[in-house]
Length: 192
Image 1 (cartoon, rainbow, N blue to C red):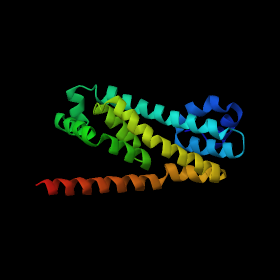
Image 2: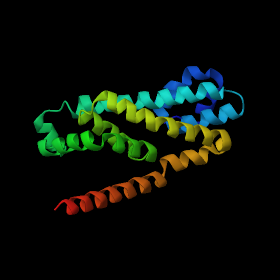
Image 3: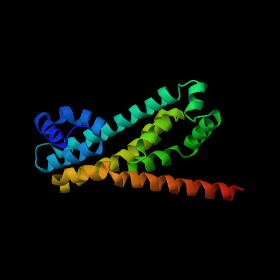
């Protein structure tokens, strides 16, 4: 992870040339810093917005292909070792066919479960066009939120970075897992 002062310096010096690649790698904190630099008129707000949205979608596409190539391309022996039995893979595929867009949007908007959902979508062989549409619909408000956060409160980017990567995200992820388990158990009980 790159230090925040280095991010500010790099983005102030090189502008949009480094914004998109940094936003692919570092995600929301780069978006917050870009919003902050736009509030100082160092970067153009109208150039920052499309750059961070594109970077978000590119990063998500990379995670999709990691899931599709790495997890989806594993042999049966390795899948079993990772707990991805044939039955679980079919369940994963069925889940993404039925609720893929909902799963992706929820994961993107919570930020905590993004990596797992993005790679799972690839492993489940979710159609790439559906993946991109759902991701784009979630990336736009998410990116706008982080740009606005940076624009309005960007001088506090160190504290914001702590919130995005600290215990708050772990608690949010744990809460989402518990909520998902409760939801699916109730849904399964209702079917019986």
